[in-house]
Length: 344
Image 1 (cartoon, rainbow, N blue to C red):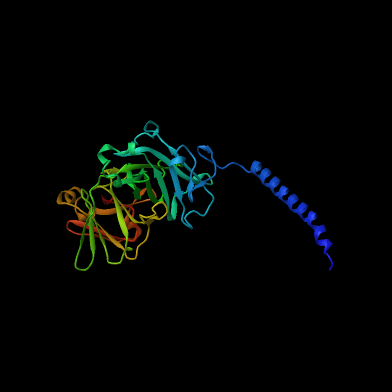
Image 2: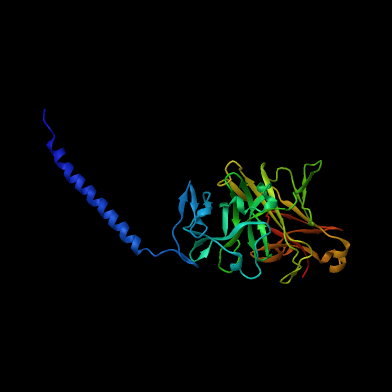
């Protein structure tokens, strides 16, 4: 038998080639790390996103208590995520903590190309930890009512996000489809707070249409059978009654409406804000004779929708507004902030 000596003779050369190639790769990576510019935000250079238990971690003073989840196709560009605590004394003028706040609010942003991303489809998930000692004593027995809120400068109010709370791990998870900056070119202001609003009132008629109303609000909306997926729920925030909002005169408390679907077995990843549904919803606002006399008749009433931080008359964008003797109605294929107002 003959021994194949050429094979053994090639081994040292092959090993040397592999070692040389590895050293070159290490050298190139090292040089590139020095030459690559640091990603920065309005706050300055920041570190890249890291991972924790499969979730993404932002950078900033709140990084140890905030994690993120990006479903597939929700964020398709390279981003830098930041989360920083903000003391009340550092809030811009006119902004205060939400009632029954838990811990400090954070400023949150996903930065790309010098600005923050605002829209996410599907929605991303933000998870914030809190301490038991931060829960208001009046809510210590109702910890499951904690929500994540986002400040909306257009309505000067805190608005609930689609939220779930794990009271055993002290984590509030929330879906975010549209981030609203609290100041020009800035991030969003988020806070955990107790939700002390009364539950929604629901009634189903013989045709299977669900009528949902909000206590202390003029709002009623109708949901047709099979319009939304089983397991979905509405999150409603009745906002302060801002009578004057620029050139729009609001006549009743505007209302923010969200459609949510949350898997409570895994809310840190499976929390969604739904932006479409199978059939249009019917949004209604009630009004009284005094309101009619103030505006000079029902022809002078209309419904407004907050779009890109501007109040838009729904009739001007093609929606059909129906005015009854004591109620005004519109069919809508999207949710957001609605308000009863007088025609300009």
